[in-house]
Amino acid sequence: MKSINNGWLAVLSLSLVLGVCSQKLQAQSALVMPDTTAHVSDTLSYPIYLEVGENDSLYGIAFELMFDSLQFELIEVITTGTLTKTNGAFSAVNIQGNDVYYSLAATNPIQESGVLLILNLLPKSARLGQIEITEYQFNELAVQTQAIRSNVVTFGNTPPSLIGLPDTLRFNQNDTLLFSLGEFIQDSEDSFSELDFELNLSPPVIVVELVDSTASLLIYSPIYVGEVVLSGKVTDKKGLFTEFSVIIIIEQAVSNESMAEQSEFPTRIQLEQNYPNPFNPKTSISFEVLKASYVSVRIYDLMGREVDVLWNKYTAPGRYQLSFEASNLATGSYIYSLVAGNGVVYSKKMTLIK
Image 1 (cartoon, one colour):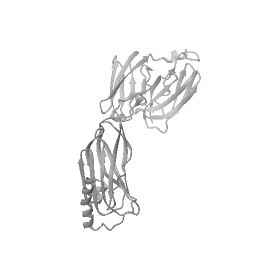
Image 2: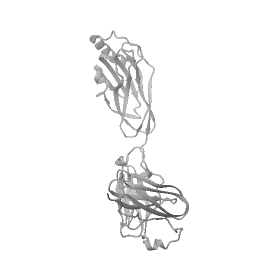
Image 3: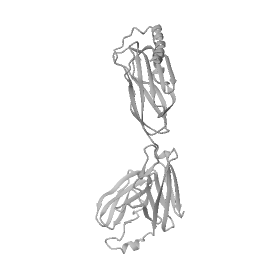
Image 4: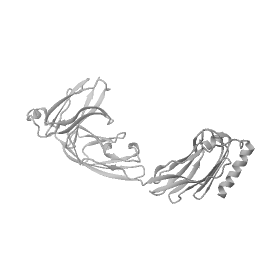
């Protein structure tokens, strides 16, 4: 307790000079240290809060804080923009190993609650750590030795993961497939804009474009019919990554004459080109399904944002025709996609001209 008392003597002496020692304290004020979480090697900005009691006249604070040096490295103590700078006629921060000694004397009684100071800490390992104020003192009251503790749960950095990614994508030659890769990415530490995507095609015979904001892929094959392997890597800002691979099957487009010869119940799933196309403001979208399953038909813009849901329910085998009305949409190209029970996504592009 020697260190905190020495620091407090300087604060108390200055308080007497400033003439505020006659103010009374009802002991309703408190120091607050919230529990929180952090990630290894990511700087944790940890605030120490001061809550001023309604009837308190608080003009002096001193405390000793300890942190686990095996768990954290103290980078700096920040007082800029805090109550320490806005209220302190005198303040001192002294760091000795894993101990931080703090003292403050105010020109006028502190009346507002807020952040007293901020500790910038660098977590070293993934485990539960503690930060605690072991002793503290308000004004000239007795030193309090009841510790104020905070638990900090530190997580290890993990690479992005791909959950439920389909093995196969299928669409027709000369159509456009909109595939939302972002729907399958899980990363609690980074947003899509902070991830790096590396894509490879084998053979490189189709066009794949990445929409960064949604991690969606626009896939187009003007000539090639057959199988292509799309492989890639998703890397976070710390360099951790996960790899993936998907088989893309491009089928020969079916002519209108061939479709007319099909029976009432189709032999495979078929998503037809909308008609008319281009359109304004209405068009029809037809599709066929082989067997009863849950089917959805959704409309997206070229940024991968969903703009409408035309069909989303359990569907019996057969041919269906949907009407799409786009009077509230802007001129441009849109993607409509069908997802059936087999999990394969079928997509086509349509153009709205107003």
